[in-house]
Length: 105
Image (tube, rainbow, N blue to C red; front, side, top):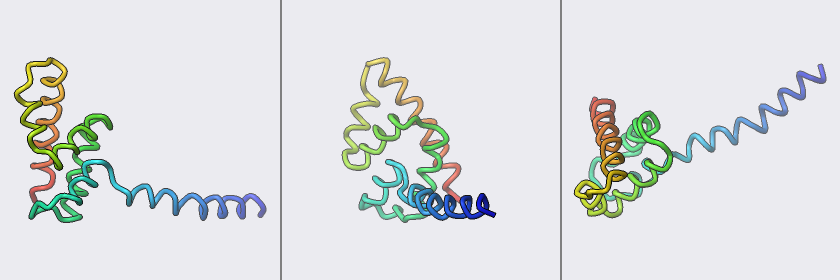
């Protein structure tokens, strides 16, 4: 019985933390929700974050999130001749294609 109580107490302590983490959202979702774009609803931003979680690393997500505040940054990366920027842009394009497909319907 003591172990059952211990498990219940641990669950009671852990579950609110886990749900808080889930509700916090990732960098793409946060940037999307802060943006003033017409289609930036909470559900759309959440969907876009889910696509980001499937296709981008945390570092790539933070970089892509910066495009919401400064779209010119995206253009600079796209036009860059650095191989690291080219590689990021390929991953970013993969993400945007996935988000478009996943979140369109």
